[in-house]
Length: 183
Image 1 (tube, one colour):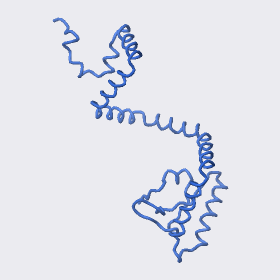
Image 2 (image 1 turned 60 degrees about the vertical axis):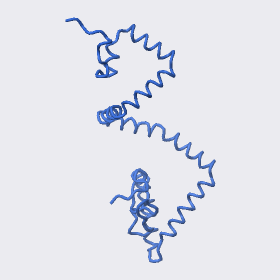
Image 3 (image 1 turned 90 degrees about the vertical axis):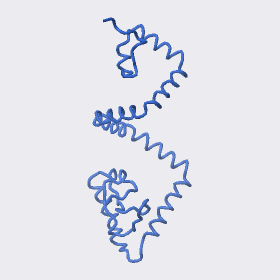
Image 4 (image 1 turned 60 degrees about the horizontal axis):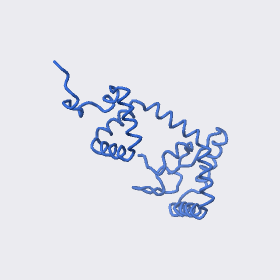
């Protein structure tokens, strides 16, 4: 039985990458040359394909993420540490260029704390939390923060600036928690 011609084969059932792997080097060179000569048409074709195959593309990315979770996490962590000084420098430059916004954020934070500080709060115990966090940071060499368990300005709930709502956390954990309340 003779092989069907290319025009008779339904290529939609064959994944694009498999079709590309089975092409001859001459065919691949022609495709590469056409892509270089027609970047707008290639971009439009890619956009259209992605739009028509959104679910398939998303499923492929999810599967890739699952297969490569550890590698991607390691790469992200490596990038974080490699660029830490650069990001710190950029943040410092931004704060210097936007002093009024920085002051505004600080004032808003102090106002939230003031408004969240009831008359019955034990100021000495609150101050002790901050002193303990500084001591732990000094002893361990790892920065620690005083965290509000229930955020002062959360989306669903607002906590108070009282001793029962404070905890000492490593800075990294506190930053990852952000403004969330975890029950």
